[in-house]
Image 1 (spheres, rainbow, N blue to C red):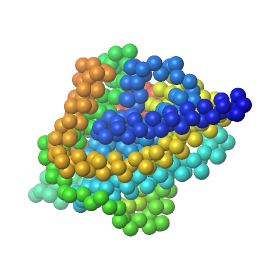
Image 2 (cartoon, rainbow, N blue to C red):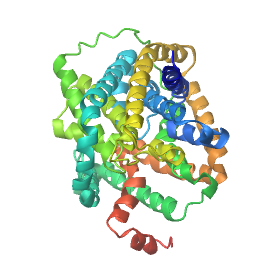
Image 3 (cartoon, rainbow, N blue to C red):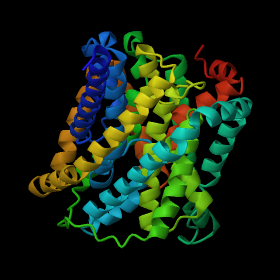
Length: 447
């Protein structure tokens, strides 16, 4: 071999090893409910000297972690009911499968959706992204603010009054109709106020400012479900380790189309999360079948996380969407087709590794659930995630997590949509993009 061939071989070997290592680390971390991969990457920035790593190690390693998380976080979302903000809608259908002893099947269906999203990114979006997405950004950039307000309005309008059949007399029926909707609106307002506080007067130390939202998201989306699991002491039935879903080509295609649409929208537009994207695409495509729904949510989650990260590498675009891309841009700024193709190759490798790991990981968690009680596992998860929040953000982060946890309990206890908690980022950013953020912050005495 000549020197150039040896150099290329070593670089390819580094990319493969780094990608597989990142995927394997994700497979372990996803077993901890509520532990987000961006928080882990932030911890690594604090504890490891990542800044000295070469690009052919940093890019594949981060890509492997993010792809692994997007694929494998399905396990706690379905089996332990502790989703992140991108997987809110997996919980209800996934819990139905779990309580019927079909948690393994529900996990596999969502994973098939993630695999479909992987194919979309690699074989549909990947080849056309460098030519299409820079043009799309120029077209949509002036309109992002009102698009976000439309998303917010649709979220709130979808909390339409329910019930109205209980109680005697007009006031009792009115209360029955509006109590869930009122709880949803209250959740939105309180989450939005918390977001303004964190944006304009955060008590988090500037040294860990990149983890500013970590305790809020843990409190809003993780702590409430873990508390509910601990208090209720749910008994999980014996799980069948088989997948006989009867999935049809029609359900697979409809779920993939809806998930790709929602995840792509969430990845491309700022602040919109995968949960919101999945919610919008579910309404747009009128999904009713549970199988197609789980497929769509798995696809949406993967396209949201991985697609948002990939946007940083698209030549001529280079925008950061999501915490992973922002952290990556602080370490290395990609700008060539070489970086783009390296990211695509890493996505393919990490996707294959994650798909191989999902079956053993799911079976392992189910065996753990059979040996230990659901309450015990939730308690251990609670201790771990609280310890991580305190370690990274200190007592100030712990206080924020408690406040956010109280807000996050409102929809859990009232039956309203947990998606309203996303106002913690949607509302302040939408106000800022509309040019009124500073004025609202002044009204709130935050300046």
